[in-house]
Image (cartoon, rainbow, N blue to C red):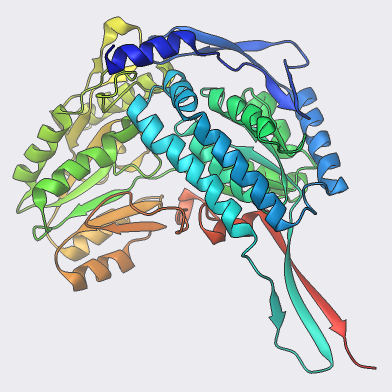
Length: 497
């Protein structure tokens, strides 16, 4: 049996989760309504998913509130929460192939990436925060001898986590791991486009021994499930990853409801800057292709703007196009596939529309630009490369969230920085150069939350992740993530007689 045949046989046998979880009970939406979960691989229906509304949201939040207030999780010793979460991580790891397959079937990413990247990084995320939580100390303020000032952190309470469809499992873990580690209860709502791994994660959490109500999972659309969850007065913290437009809306909803703590990680139009003295131009070209075409370009940090020094631009772009040819879309269930399907038909049409706009505005199409694998019934688009000539084109300014690369030439370091920062976003950026002083100057000058030098998309759980400007606020990953899920309390004790 070939690797492809193995995954196809697994896909035929897998049990698709299709029940929400509230207070450890798996059930349908109270209304009985469902919506079809469609696989982008072939356009076929995978399952009928509960279409939750305000009734379900109210039940989930009420249950989480009761569980939090009674303190069975929030007041548990950090070392005991750590033990429980470490077991949870082991259980997720034990279901690695199942979770990876659900992710691939649900949103179209290559199975090799789902297994090696998404699931493994999710397990590490849970483990990391579990291990961290009993090593995070409070503070003692510098005071006079007759008083004691203590600074402590307490869990917020009930956290609403609304996560996107491009990395459904990993983004869920980025939210729930630090939230649970710090003693909160979580209501998780995945995107309606990719709900499967969130539903399975909720089941695995119960199998791992997390108390009922500590992690509730509901599904449904933004207007009917996400909006009531964000507005709910008993939700103390709202965390979100997704588009900037929705992020702005949720910030206002959080403020106007109960002024709940609201943190959003939003879009990007990340620049990847190539100087002629890059240590390895061939490596840089391959990395430039991977930085935009990985996960079909459905990545908030995708290096969708490639800034190349004009002295090497033509030859460098030829190398990038060559690398792109090796990443043509294929069957996501084939481990050899490097680029899979876009999440659904509407996203595919969005990407194709942007490609048309690029052509209409005068950008030169260097590679791709069309739908692919049409006869499969799935939603595939070729890796596409434009030479824009200017940063003012629509395809250079707006987040496409697909496999579309826009190249822009520059002549000086100052010009490169000006182009790179000429965007409403500020999530990520990269610079390739052998000049140490230039690397530091450009990295310091880039308005972005993550900057990489001589590679793209590096880092791990030890460093914070988030953006400047309209790419959001707050940080995921690292100890900084814990700040989003806790309140700081100052306690003063009079020691005088």
